[in-house]
Image 1 (cartoon, rainbow, N blue to C red):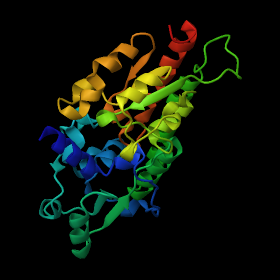
Image 2: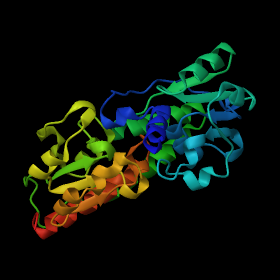
Image 3: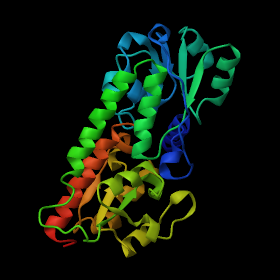
Image 4: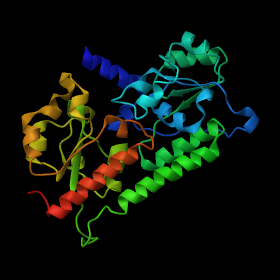
Length: 303
């Protein structure tokens, strides 16, 4: 039952795209004038919640999604506890009298359709699968809520974090033509991050080669532990913290065989919220990946 609830949460957020199963893009929006700024915004998407909460004043947010307070999945969980939240049923949304409703591209289709038929302003956004796309989503949402200046500030702060991290991506004395260390990002249920995903982009930015492209990847991006053991990466990335999930879906992250290969190589454990959504919080993942790369290269490789 716990695993089923976890999958339902992912479906609600429409985030399978980040594992490489679905290709994602952004939808365009038009700018609004100061007088048109929405004052009662409802977000029905957890990924949008995490950007919206930094974009507009609290009194302009009528409700965030109910997943905004999920500490495993949301980077703003604690802050979101002080905001109204809604589960996505049309009745609950209409009762809030919103002037803007933001939904994910793959979530709450029935609710979205009903709200549109009721004449509500509903805007659909799709999650980005690249660092560049994160900037685009922030800009899109900023224009949508009439806060382009604040959006630019968020993007600038995001870029500064990335610049600070990648400026130290290579240890002193290393050569530019040295091969990049390999890394494999493993999620629950033995899913790995393939090319075209946000985590793959973060690996590249950190100066790491995603070894998933060299493995025999099964349906839905799954790689058996036996293959990982036979072809271990230089750096193992646990894209979900094992303790976050008590279900059998995370047993692969706790398997003794996987633990054994981590003894002689760096292991990066990323909080799920760092890469599950295309938000500026992916900077946390880049920072940790760069730190692991520096550790690996300073030690001269796998010990």
